[in-house]
Length: 170
Image (cartoon, rainbow, N blue to C red):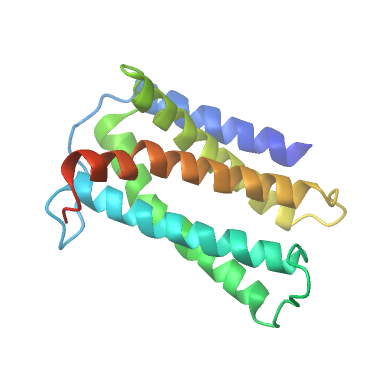
């Protein structure tokens, strides 16, 4: 499957770049936040919330809730919540790659780095599958689930960790 191969290449490429890049320890700070880390945590939390919308809308579209018929706008909600979620992850990823790189010094950070690479690889593979007719029916839910799982893993190893160690700071 070409999409999976391209996704894997993207994931490995991001990991290699993050590992070889010399961390600057500063990068993106979004106005209104006290630090880049705080901005990262809140942007990732918003992306996580939209990923939950993605999960719910996909389950409705695939008929996984008995007696619930997907309204006509469900597909639009699914597409736009996904687009916005990924857009919210871009400044987070830039900050992580540029300021911190791929790190493996402690287990939480290693798992987070791996999830970050996996997230973008799975996302690229899913987007390629959307453009290809004739893909196996199972492939889109599997890659969509991989994107969701990676984002949940990212959120658990970063935002949740940040909020439990630093509090709900902006």
